Length: 213
Image (tube, rainbow, N blue to C red):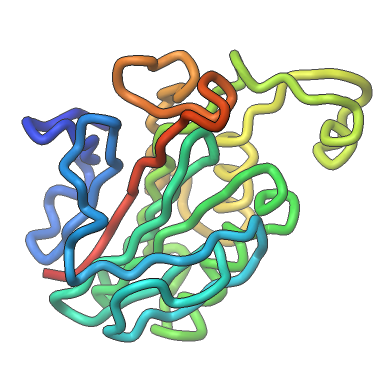
């Protein structure tokens, strides 16, 4: 269950039971988390590149998923319609943040992030929790034939990116009952969210973050 707290950050009720975890999906009214000295981010390039943060902060390089298990540090991705995903390994106290636009989704960034957590932390996919945050919904994401073809569709159609990422998580071995979907469309949610489709170059970016206290 997603809910918005007093800081205008969306939290996931199922993840709140972990006292060691910091997490959230930012909105356009959230505090400026980019100024947090603990924070690591990426130059996002719509790829399947996953980088381990390993206690580093700042801009760590090109990629679209960050991994962390060092206490006292945060990792984040920036979105304004793309799908942000938080992966939480309760067994090893490790997290990942994933930026999944259509290009990253086609390249399997979500599956790749789960595999990267297995390699880095010994994560067991069936023990992962995955939260799929606010992003552009099928209601507002009409694409042309060139993009539709990557999703097995013909002609102009609407794509459900969040569901495509959910299916990748299932394929990677994450249990269906441990996948939590916000179901919040950034283009529809004018008051809460930035949207590149709606606002074009005027759109800001929202931070979705996770870390170990």
